[in-house]
Amino acid sequence: MNEALLRSLTPSVLTILVRRGADFAAAEDAVQDALVEAVRVWPADPPRDAKGWLVTVAWRKFLDSARSDASRRRREDLAGEEPAPGPTPAADDTLQLYFLCAHPSLTPSSAVALTLRAVGGLTTRQIAQAYLVPEATMAQRISRAKRTVSGIRFDQPGDVATVLRVLYLVFNEGYSGDVDLAAEAIRLTRQLAAAIDHPEVAGLLALMLLHHARRASRTAPDGSLVSLAEQDRGRWDTASIAEGIGILQAALARDRLGEFQAQAAIAALHADAPTAGETDWVQIVEWYDELARLTDSPVVRLNRAVAVGEADGPRAGLAALAELDDSLPRHAAVAAYLHERDGDLVTAARLYAQAAEKASNLAERDYLTRQAARLNARTRH
Amino acid sequence: MAKYLLLKHYRGAPAAVNDVPMDQWTPEEISAHVQYMNDFAARLEKTGEFVDGQALAPEGSWVRYDGEGRPPVTDGPFAETKDLIAGWMVIDVDSHERAVELAGELSAAPGAGGKPIHEWLEVRPFLTAAPNVTECH
Image (tube, rainbow over all chains, first blue to last red; front, top):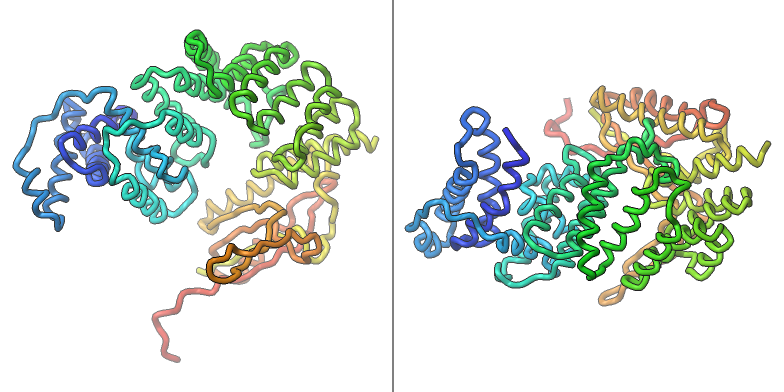
């Protein structure tokens, strides 16, 4: 059975139910039940019209639960009609679903969970595993999220930027369990790009594809991180890079720059370099300047200092770094890197060890400790 | 079955036999250590004894309630705090002996010079759920 097909049908089945008058929370439960049923039944008895089957079963599940519900009046209104599977909903409907699941009244973690379930068609258990929380906790988070958005009209216009932030979170955070969240984020962003013509959606999709292309080379066989400069570029996924660059170029041509397009442009410049030494750092600095103008983020300025260090030498990088608050996350790590490039190994080793203490994840902590160890070993001889 | 917490300390445990800070090891020694820890957890998953393992950042803060309508008071981090937890592993085993045996293996993880660290780990039993048979025999 094709699970990808099944899950790609989730948003349109859900929006059909909502269009027919089911409230969002009940419709979403009914679609989940229908998906579970499909996984059980389809292998032995595949339907000719997958979507029609899902709509029929989900609608029946919805009516069953409405029937057993206390709200009698509502049940009688709806149970009378048993419409045939409706026409394919407009791309607009899928878009509305994204807006609802990323509604600004939701916390980021709730928006992520609701998006993965209602748009992505993942089960509560799969989502719980991906974020390492008990299934009951995730079930509560999702039902609270559904209550939060229950008063919002489905056709209310939303903000693409909130949806993009949620998809970026899915791509960037979470644990690799049964579900590949990065691949799921790409699938959902691709689906969003089909529903709305927006350069920042394209920018985010390009950014994800370009980073995903490097995934195989980002970790050594023992699980440790490999820095961009040391990655085996032969293992980068060239098809994914080509697709990302194509999407980015089309987006940039429209001259409506945003932060995701700028980030993707930086990723594209790295992807373009046959070796680390051939990286066009001057252009990368220019893109960081654009990004700093767009976001005013200190994290961007920190990354810019690294790029300046490569383009104009480590002293210039350290000068750029000196303008920034040293309590920023990863400040010590960047300082360590620049001091090493400048030949001051003792300072670099001390800063790497200090950066390791501030690391927010285990892989990064191990990486930084290893850098300190490498330099300490060199300075001992 | 009984659950035990194996606690690893940044500070507060008696000094290990092979007590060298990790940034003074060679990169290969660090790799060997990480590999040992991963293998250990994987092996306990296979035997059905692994429950959870997590590492903690060294820096945190103290927080307490400060009365109705007031934000909580925060303090720290205190450099002088005697006890600092680095991380833990929770295991579910048949006996206290087994918990001690496993803690011993974990403490043998290689460190500087590729030699076991002989680090002190704290082994703490979980308080269990109340039994259903409550009469004395």
